[in-house]
Length: 163
Ligand SMILES: [Zn+2]
Ligand SMILES: [Zn+2]
Image 1 (tube, rainbow, N blue to C red):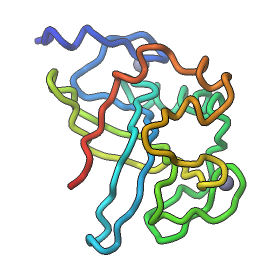
Image 2 (cartoon, rainbow, N blue to C red):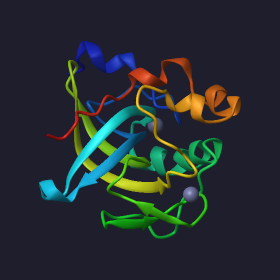
Image 3 (spheres, rainbow, N blue to C red):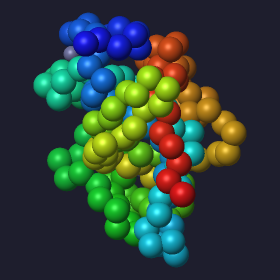
């Protein structure tokens, strides 16, 4: 049985229409709050691409990361106080807002998107991607980045802020 909302999106790689469960590449600014037992504050979450299967995700998202000009590190960042910047290999202070790329396995419930699994792809230090409240990510970078994003990409995934 196909729900009405299932046909609204196509896989970025193979153009298959989505199942309610899908894979996505997103980016957002995050900050770990160790005072709150490692709670994570999220700002400016932005869905980049969505895929019907993990195979489509794995085959396509490296090209999106290349457009973002962020190398995919061999060792994926975790949630320590300091992780390594994917761009300059310098330290990332994880307790301050920093740009984070994630892969997600989520369920589209029509009226909301529920992340089921989230995996870090890369974190970027504050020098390479400064965080400013209220400034969109695209303006922090060259116009190339703006063109790399499809116009509808901002609506694809909206992450709830963990509380
Ligand atoms: Zn696909
Ligand atoms: Zn850096």
